[in-house]
Image (cartoon, rainbow, N blue to C red; front, top):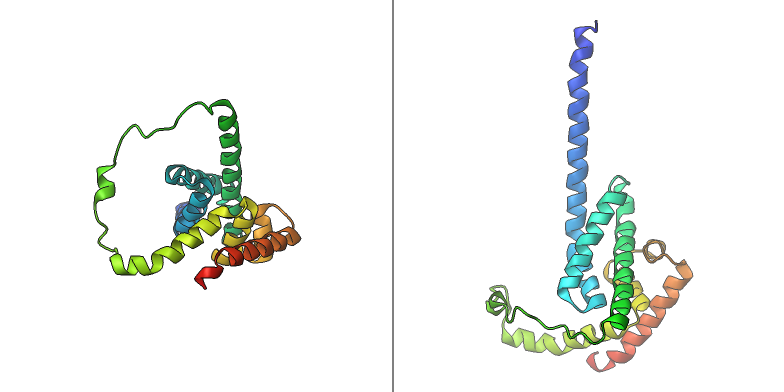
Length: 198
């Protein structure tokens, strides 16, 4: 028979394991909350469709947690962007296949107008502020959309997300030299397209 002191230690170990798992899940949730908006924007730029972008980001988050949630938190950022990058590439491949086979289908919105889309946003700065920033924002958005996929990814991961060259190379699954080349070309393209807005 086990002494009473041994029996008392077992629940404590279980409680610390449960507490550790709870802390880990909270850390993952915090990390995903910090990248969620930027990931959605990146996916929107890649797909040009908000619904598909939301699906891609959700799928990337589930895949990240499933595959890399147990990794050290310092490794999460490049690993998450790698998962999202894979999902974006898969989406583009599916679109090419669908485009070949279903080019004759016309995608129309069957639901009509969304009544919630017409509700004004209380945080909206107003028409004058929108007008002042509108042209530059549209130009930047168009310039980012016009970049080839790899250049756009390198730009967003390095400049927007703030990853270093090595982490960006990990996320994009390419060499550090390729990241530098893609980024250099992206910056040159953006400078040319946005010259009028300087």
